[in-house]
Amino acid sequence: MVIRKVRADLLPSDAKLIAYSWVDSFSVYFIVSFVLGIIICLPLIAYEVYAYINPALYPHERRFLIAFSAAFIGLFAFGAWYSYVLLTPVTVKFLYYFALATGAEPIFSIRDFFYFVGLIVLISGFFFTLPIGLTLAIKYEVIDPSILEEKRKLVIFAILIVAAIITPDPTPVSMLLISIPFIALYEASMRVGKWLLKSKKKTTG
Image (tube, rainbow, N blue to C red):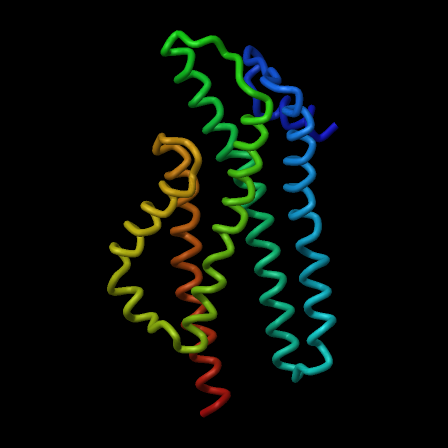
């Protein structure tokens, strides 16, 4: 059912998927199961980690860990959802029409298609959690937020380069679709990190 839904949601109606080898269809079930397993198990893993270290935490550490876990899961879910709803459909359609423009028949490997979709969804999900690390680095004074503000243009350029590297297609479409919201998250994480740093200094001061 999941395989049919992904195909109906993302694949253009004129495109066809074929199995190039005997194990291609089996590989598709493995890829889909692996991606769904990561997405579904993340909240459970977060809870198990929290339950394990909870007895050793102070109340303020417990509240912070809950907020951190919720933010990580929320950003990962948002990144995966954003990828599935917007990033992947646009990329697939762009590559599909690009293939038609070259005169190629719209016939693709079923294994390559689902590997492509799963890779984009997972990469996008984890990529969107990186601002949490940035926020923590500011909070614990590993990174000075003023330096990040001064080097904003350089950081944005680096984000574009990383986005171009991690996106599986060679066009700038996926790069822009994944980097633009991430840049917004980067700006938000700087502000949250500065706020947490000020709160920490007030508490310890």
